[in-house]
Image (cartoon, rainbow, N blue to C red):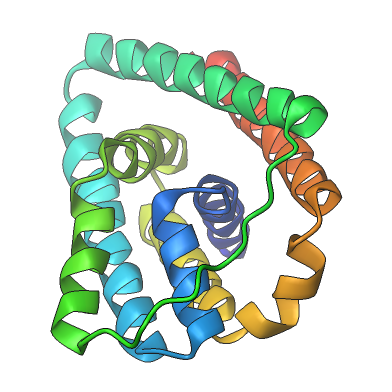
Length: 201
């Protein structure tokens, strides 16, 4: 069962660790030392809800319709391959760095609303948590709770590490080479997961 949890953690981390609006927002709040706990808690709780919907909602539906399982796996593998390809291209061509912008202190309600918007209004969140994690979880029918727990732990670990560890990470991630390495690792992980989906069909 522990192996299922490790698999869930690995999948969760590979999907969540990317340069996106939500993560950039968490990083900036961490750098500014503003409402860090609120932001991290909101993101982690939101991800928990979406992951559980994917593993025990979406996955439950497709398990009762074999054709839907095959279709969802093909779609998931295709998206993962494309997602990995984007990161592979970024690893070779990107010259951008993620630098925080200086802003005045915002009210916690304003920060909360922005955080919720980055999470719940982002279509990629549903693709990555509900659909992709839900599809991948069908491979672990005997250990879904452990797989889901691993993915949830990855989310909580990542957001709180990013928020509170922002100042430590900033000097390194201000260099484009650091993002290139990260993009390359994400690309490889996405392709491995995509391959496992295809092989399980």
